Amino acid sequence: MGTVLIPIPDRDFDPTEVAVSWRVLTRDGHRVVFATGTGSPGVADDIMVTGRGLDAWSALPGLGSVRLVGLALRADKNGRAAYRQMLQSAEFRHPTTWARASLDGVDALLLPGGHRARGMRGYLDSDVLQRLVVDAFHRGLTVAAICHGVLLAARSVDPGTGRSVLHGRKTTALTWAMERTAWRLTRITRFWDRDYYRTYTEEPGQPGGYMSVQAEVTRALADPADFRDVARGSPHWRLKASGMARDTATDSRPAFVVDDGGYVSARWPGDTHTFAASLSRKLK
Image 1: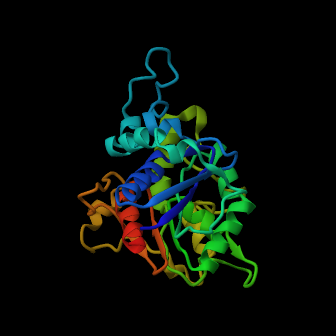
Image 2 (image 1 turned 30 degrees about the horizontal axis):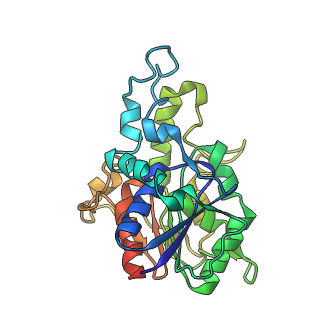
């Protein structure tokens, strides 16, 4: 069995991508080590846990607990249950810091995501974490990244080559189609915080989607075709591309995971069971 280091932001990480990965790995007998920026236990994006704040009436007194869009976009029952369990675990309650995190004795590095800018930008922009990612690839560790976690990997530049560690690799990440759909919806329903679903938005003169996860990751690759998405007409492609169906421990049909040898990637919380199981198999 292996040891997996999971660095997370102090707040606003996606509860499913972290907690389901933790549950799959620990149930398979692997050891998980968490790291946060401050060394205190992290806190997930509360909107993705509860679904509160995603409906147009959320700010009205007495109506905040009434959810519609929130029920569709928040973590499902598997993600919420895993998050509750993870909060009680010793490893989650006693993380190390990003600066003190060591890859000695570690077999894999797992990079989860989240989209809320207030907590995620420090994680994605961290020089400390980017150096850690480069070191993991140099050591030949298995690296797994999902959603915005792929963006952290894409930004990790090997000083020896001047290129991203993902240059020459095949990967997926949160697709622009998924990101744009959720962004357009929440711009209407969460009108007082119109860019909640975009971690980075375009500057004047930049085309639409230029600062999307897919676009930035693709710019780091050797070939744009190395960014992979569900192929139209492939098995279960409608289910995989819907952005609504999520995988479970026993049903991987909605999931899309790209396996590039020592590097594994996935798109969004709906891929997490399959994503984490793929990493677990490699560690075994």
